[in-house]
Length: 323
Image 1 (cartoon, rainbow, N blue to C red):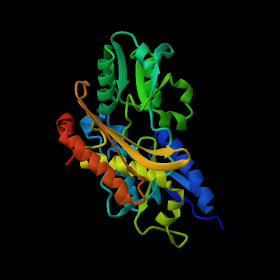
Image 2 (cartoon, rainbow, N blue to C red):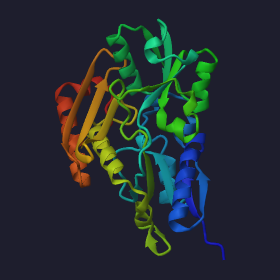
Image 3 (cartoon, one colour):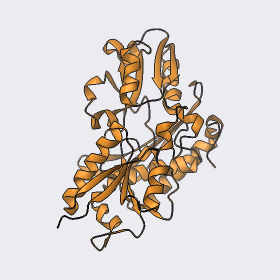
C-alpha cells in the first residue's frame, strides 16, 4: 500500500515552488514519506499595489496559514522575511533550515557595479528598506540615482533592466540562487552597504500545533531540519523588528552573525538600521553578546538593540508603525 503523501502548502511563484521543492526533498529523505506540493494563491500574489501600500505584513502568508489551520495542508514553507513577528498559538515554527546568502544583489545593464551607474540612473526595488539604504549610500558617495518602486517576480524585475526601462534592480541573492539565476548578478552588495531584511535568506517551515505524522507530532519530525545557528540569528533579527513595532515592509534592515576567534565561535553580533526612504536620515547601530543558547537570549539581543535605536529617533523614520 502506498503511503499517504504529506501535503506541503506553498505559494505558486517560481521561487516559492523552487524553495518548497527543496524542503519537500529534505522531508522525504527524513521521513520516507512522499511529499505533495499544494499551490495556494495569497493576497500578495494577486494584488498589484506596492507592498508598502498593502501593509506588507503577512500578505504572502495569511492564505497558507489559513490552509494549515483548516487542515488542508500538513505543513507550509515561507520565506522567513515575509512572516509576521507574532506567532499564532495554533501554529508552530517547526524548523528554520540553514540560511542561504542573506545579501542583496544588483542586476544592472552592461554589467555595471553600483558605483559605476550613470548620473540619474533608475534603480528598481519593491522595498522601502533598500530604497532608504541605496539613497543614503548614493548621497554619501555624491551619486545621483532615482529609486523606482516595482513589483513582480524575478523574471519581471530583471525584465525591467533587459527592456531598458530601468538601469538596475536590487534583489535578494538567496532567491536568485534558489532558481539558478546567480549568473545574472552584476554585484553582490556588501552588508556594510545595505543590511538585508530581518530573516532574509532563511526559510520557515510551519505546521499546526498538535498535528501528527505516523503517530508523532509533526513539529518534532520537522524539527530535524532546524539549524540552531540560523534560528538564533533570525530570532535576534525578528525580535528587533518586533520591538520597533515595524512590519516586514518597513524600512528596517537587520543581520545577526557569529563572530569567531580562529575556529571558536565566541559571540553574536547584531546590526540594525532604520532609514527615511530618501536616505537623508539613518539610524544604524550594532550590539554584540554571547552566542545565544535559548530563544529568550536571542530575542533579548534584538530587544536591547531596538531600544537603543528608538532612543536615537528610529520611530520617526518608519512612518506608520505596525501596532
